[in-house]
Image (cartoon, rainbow, N blue to C red; front, top):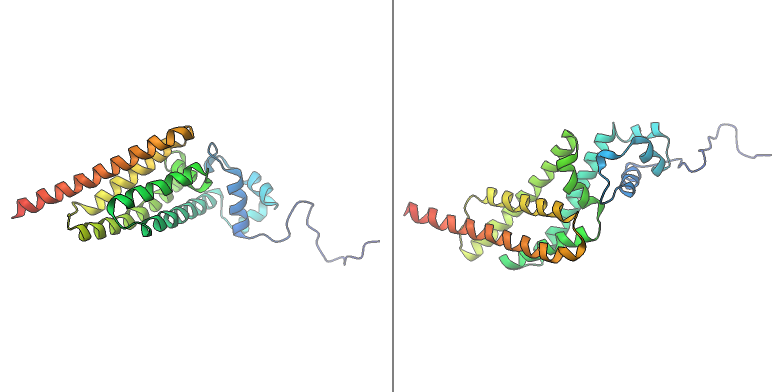
Length: 218
């Protein structure tokens, strides 16, 4: 005979009695991959992976769009931390460009689902997804602008339209990263070389424009 009190509810097999918002995010990440977009997830499969009833999902998220935005925000935070650490280890303009590009490509080669989210959802996701990705790109641009300005001051090299320069670099790297998702890994070294060279071209161009602008004012 069972010794459980009549008022104690027993969760169905495979379902957890208590689950957090982070548990649902972790379940969604397990379902994602290089060829799987957030926009293709269904509520039922996320709930099944998390071990909860579908209705329990709504205790933490209004809908799948809200979950996707949370994943995009997490992806942006994670990558900004990685890139930020690479910048901190660098002490020159060239090492910043190389170090940050290497860190970005390392995450891509690691099949990090968070990076895949950022690279894919800005082009194939819903309006809410695209807005969330745009917000994360703006964060990258703001942080890069600060670094570019700092390095320009150290070198006394000038910087033309710092915000636009940071945007050009950020959009270039993310566009090239999206291309890399469909390339075999033995092509990544050449792609990395191209990205580094193109970023340095942008920086050289903004420095040249700054010098021209300064000369025109004098």
